[in-house]
Image (cartoon, rainbow, N blue to C red; front, side):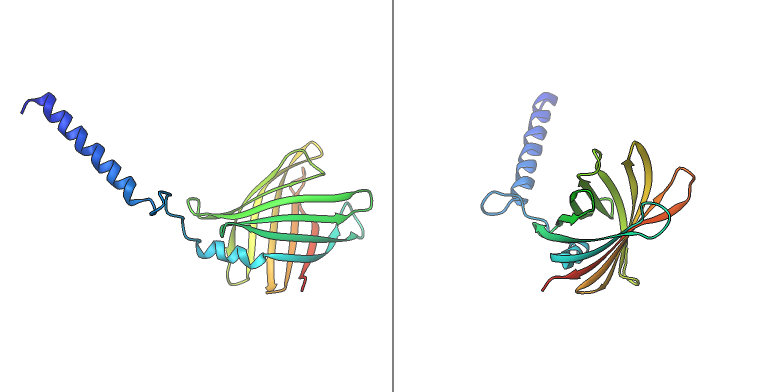
Length: 187
């Protein structure tokens, strides 16, 4: 067998093996197999449902502003938690949307948040501490023309209660608490 013909045979065998490998990775209906949710995805699904929210916002020194809100969480497949948040703020009707998920490649939780107060989305990455039952996220946000470091902690109290704390690091490098939300699952 000459070299050219040997190369063609090897190429043909490689092509058949590739087609065979692809054929093994599809279901009977021709679709690729659906991935199974990781334990981290299942952990997020515990947040499904409608939650009544008691909010406190620190806009500066002194007492926080208090508001009420509602968060509605649904699943996108068994992988992603999609949130819709509304609240009656003193000067406006607040609306925000978030997606929280587990990234199996990064081995981190990820969060994307957009709302009516800012033009830039907030992207965060985080971990979960099983001992304290809390998600810890860090990231940055563009607020009033300034890029600020942020830290979020979502502590799961029990199946029907959770607390969210948001911390912002100012231009002076000092971190301060800017928001707290106490969640109660609506029955």
